[in-house]
Structure formats: C-alpha cells, structure tokens
Image 1 (tube, rainbow, N blue to C red):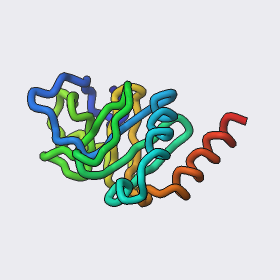
Image 2 (cartoon, rainbow, N blue to C red; image 1 turned 135 degrees about the horizontal axis):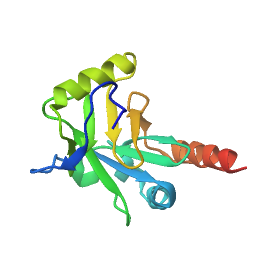
Image 3 (cartoon, rainbow, N blue to C red; image 1 turned 180 degrees about the vertical axis):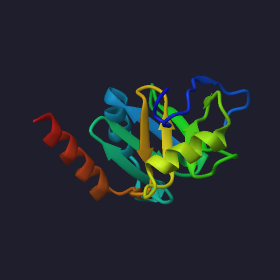
Length: 148
C-alpha cells in the first residue's frame, strides 16, 4: 500500500479488535446509514459527531451509541498511535507508529487521520461536527449536488 508514503506494507487481520469509536460507511451503505440517522431522536444524537464525503459517511462516538446498518464497518484510535484511527478488525503489517509518522508527514495540518483499506483512503477526522438534523440535511444536499 502506498498511502503512507515510502513504507511498503499490507493490511492484516488484527489479533484483538480495537474498541469501536467510529462507524464508517461507503456508497449505498453510507446512504442507508444516513437514513438510519434521520430516524434518531435528538437525545440519541448527543455525543455523536459526523463527517461526510462524496461517497462516505463517518459517525464518531461511544461504541454503544454508534448506529448499525447492514454493511457498516467500524474504526477506532490505535493504542500505539492515538492520532491514527484504523479499522477495528485490520491493521498494517508494519509498526503502527512508523505508519502514523509517515502519514503525519504527508498530512501535517490534519489530525487525527482515519486510514482505511477498501477503498484505500486517508480521511482527516478534524472537521467532525455534532450530529443534528441540520448536519444530515447538509450532507444530503452535498450528495444530491454531487450526483447532479
């Protein structure tokens, strides 16, 4: 994988899952997660934050408050490099601190970072906003604008 600069590495299954701190959804799963979030009561949104991209929705919060939809995946901060978030079930096959330092050199102003395997992505988590109906409407508007 080349996302971490000059370090050559691959994803491997994690022996012990990370504690979940984020729900990560791409494509149709992101849209299903969005629909699920629209059904939450305002009190259920407390403590949750979100960020979105063209084909992506990430919701961050306590593990027991994170939503579920079919196809969703989860991420959490690495114990060895807290500024680096990884899938809960996979990890790079190289020392995490080296991967984190390489990513921080490439993205010095954007911390923390979520490193994702499929699709390959490095996603800044520094622009999370509190989950609300207004934020969900903004995300939907952005997605509709991209699809147009």
